Amino acid sequence: MSFTPATIDFLFENSLNDSKSWFHDHRYQYETFVAKPFKEFTEALTPAVKSIDEHISHVKISRIFRDARYARGKSIFRQNMWCTFSRGRDLFKSLPAFYFEISEKGFEYGCGFYMASAETMNDMRSMILNDSPFFAAALEAFESQEVFELYGDMYKRDKFPDESPEKKNWLNRKNIGLSALSKDWELLFSDRLPEKIAEDLNSIAPVYDFFIKAEELSADR
Image (tube, rainbow, N blue to C red; front, side, top):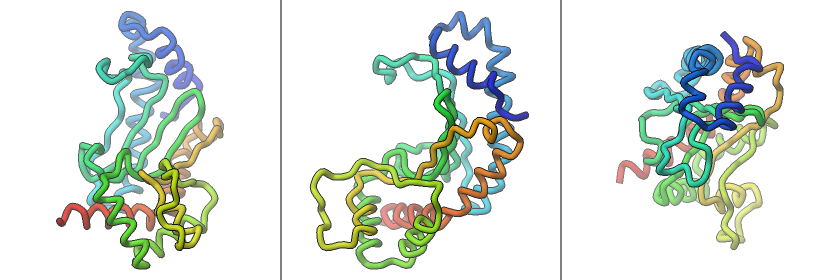
């Protein structure tokens, strides 16, 4: 079952109403238009991400509501849904992951860290500065495509003024990953979606390998 316009409509109305009673009254729509297609989408995409990293063992689909303790003024009930594919459950522990997210704004997907540790980022920078073949492959894969962009806040001051612009684009980030944003509703609502996402993620597999290598170096200490 594919995502449909009803998926987006439900997420928008769910957040707009932000009510347990409203959600209870519309739970059938949630199960039909959100939960079921998300489950089928992750099942369809899992073989592709496992072909990139056979150690990926955890597939997580977000809850439809936020933890009230961390909502910070936002609606408790979400207007977006996301899923992640990673080697472990806790993405707060600096594990890189593949991800996919939908909302009324469109859909986003990519790979990277939710919050990379300082140790992981330092190891990544060392690999870049020492011309690691993992970074060379990652840089080539990144520069050979036009779908994904690097994310992660940049330091206000350039910490590596003597390096090339290509390297500085990676070195000066506090966190890092690749993301693609799309409003191709026709693709989102089609059966071709998992195949297209798989194809794009495979094109940046060397970037994911680079992230994993940096994480492994930090974990081995």
